[in-house]
Image (cartoon, rainbow, N blue to C red; front, side, top):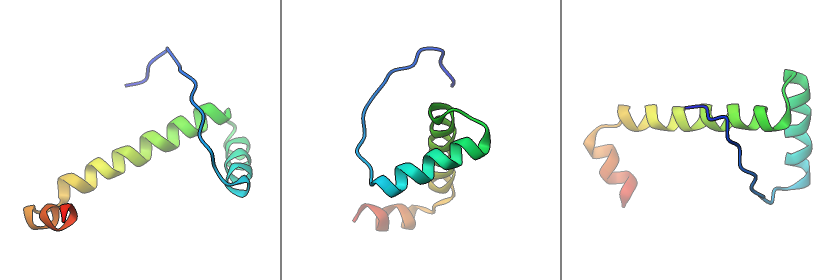
Amino acid sequence: MPDDKKQQFNVYLPPDLIREVKHAAVDSGKSLSTFLEDVLRAHLKQLAQQRQQETPDDEITRKT
């Protein structure tokens, strides 16, 4: 669901994590924004797949 419209938002992260993410973006040849967008989308996709694989008992346990 890529969208051409982009919106800025601020998050507060530990300096060492910011440095690590910036280096990873450079190493991947992507801008910081594109790198983070890709990482966040991949993580959300992984979470959705994990939820689909859960049994009803797993879901009840997670909610309690």
